[in-house]
Length: 260
Ligand SMILES: C[S@@+](CC[C@H](N)C(=O)[O-])C[C@H]1O[C@@H](n2cnc3c(N)ncnc32)[C@H](O)[C@@H]1O
Image 1 (tube, rainbow, N blue to C red):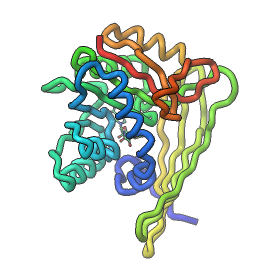
Image 2 (tube, rainbow, N blue to C red):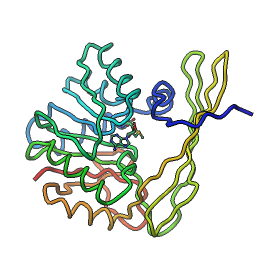
Image 3 (cartoon, protein in one colour):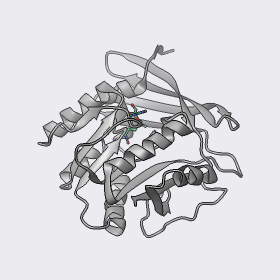
């Protein structure tokens, strides 16, 4: 039985990045393809709200983009900046709240994948976030927003696990739904990292509340922010030549929003 430590998993960037950092290629290629297909004019400056360890940011910097981001977790921001610096880029991630920030110079595009948006627990915070994003983008700028929808028919996937290894460190990650309250639009998710090194092994665990969205609920939210409009929708297959039409069965989506 592993010793269990209750803590915010996002404050352990070394383990987070090992698990989530290995799965980046399809996402990166998709972002580049969307910038190419939907970008009105040149896309050079990118922003990632809730950037965490910046697993995509430093790779986009290597592709020649100017990148910046914010995140609530100071350890994750340090990790992100240290890696940017190691690769020869500026320390452009900041501790900040994606529902309450302003930028000095507007960005050409922004991206927010893998459910980060659903951490915003209310309609008010979600709208504030979209308004902040609209404020951070130049006219015609793009915001790629990816997360799991709640299908209105069928049951959503409610358990996932991954493992990853680097040198002597291996991490097994598990994520499962403890409770789904459709009326309150809240999904309580338990997450854990089982960490194994030659000298120690332990479990980090916590739970997080995710706001749920059916596609009509998300349509209403987007409509309430007139500065953004939907230009296309994709799914987690990340195929830029295969946009998807949202339906009651849709489980995951990447909205391509554009600043009007
Ligand atoms: C699932 S992780 C995603 C990290 C990164 N975007 C990635 O793709 O690997 C969610 C991140 O959102 C951050 N976060 C949650 N609420 C936030 C908020 N209100 N403002 C900024 N960051 C937030 C967490 O600290 C965490 O790093």
